[in-house]
Image (cartoon, rainbow, N blue to C red):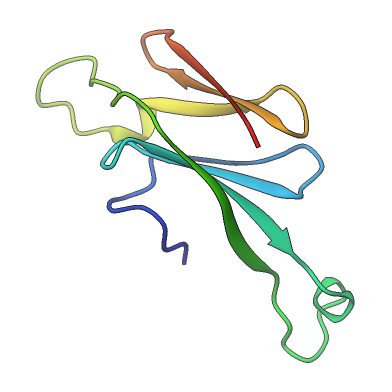
Length: 102
C-alpha cells in the first residue's frame, strides 16, 4: 500500500533504473515521487526485509478532465513517461504534458 494520495492512484511508473517510483492521483491532482530504500538484506529477500518507499517530492498539477462527462475510466486519463532516471512526463489523454524532475 502507498499512503500519500487522498484518492485512488491514476498512474504509476518506475524510473528506468528502478530507484524511483512516480504516482499520480487525479482525485487530489498531485504527482508524488518515491525513493526505494533497499538494504543489503532487503535486496536479497532475507529476514522478511521488504523494500520501503519514502516520499521525497510532491507536486500539485492541474486535474486531468475526462474525455466526456460522466466517463468513469480514470486509468485512461493520464500516464507517466520517464525520459531519464530523474525526469518524468505526466501525459494527459488530450496530449497535454507536464514535466517534472525528481
